[in-house]
Length: 399
Ligand SMILES: *Cc1c(COP(=O)(O)O)cnc(C)c1O
Image (cartoon, rainbow, N blue to C red):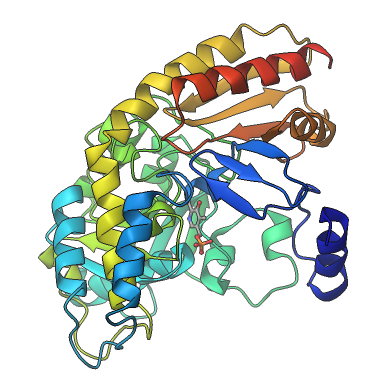
């Protein structure tokens, strides 16, 4: 079958909840993906940062294969010999005392919200049912009913009511707006350290530290959603580390699965995590031994290949070189590490630019019409990055 045939099957049998670029991927390795016709592309989306270690990293694939011959699923009714070592690795890598494993990013956010509400009721003494969580406009925390109740993007929430109460929305990147929204029932502030889906919106320096201080002053929890920004993407292990604004609860997902399977978690210290007691939260698949084996290998790759330093260095090059490309419709290039976006004039439709990039062998996707996100696997070589920048220059110069 040809690419066109696969696309036709998707359109005939699939729900139409996405608008993908017309390209079919049937093989991948490292930074490169291939379509059924054999054309090779540089992957500049990395499955929304779930493939930081590159496609089919041999160390992670080997760990998965080995585990597939031992045991893959036990449920949490019993212990398994991979979950403990995995959680130890994750806690040591992130500097937290405890981890609670789930599967998708949205579940990790749910797990954080539930922990915060329970902490509010049991530790802070807010009457149950009154707990409030402050969140930021422009956020993306996933697709569950709670996550879309935090959203102010109509595409995400329209006609899915009734919405989950208890969320207070304030403008992003404005710490004083958070402080004004705090009251005696506030239990947490939940934000992304950089808003990924919003188009790689980087808050001003000092914002995260200010949020941390507000939370300390008012005895409320700081929840950082690092599902997209975590695991070296922004040039640090976690994006909050740019400001030493250590959150009370950190949500992680995406790259924790090493590009192989969904693995997520929340991280916290005992004082928060201990609100969870037997039976109060869980997941059939969370903490399964296959995920444990893959999660350990995924973190080992980040460490062994120093992907934080790599993302920081290559990100500087990317922004400098793409900034220098002449293109009258381009307004600015922004980002941290290898999480970057090019913003075009308001009203500009970037779809055709993505199509042209595709034709030149680079896959990237626009968001909000006029923004293109560029986020390659962090294992991208200097040469592949140079190749990508030259493709971007060729395409942008013709706009
Ligand atoms: C992708 C994402 C999520 C949701 O993760 P899923 O695995 O798709 O459920 C949550 N928060 C942020 C910041 C994300 O980028």
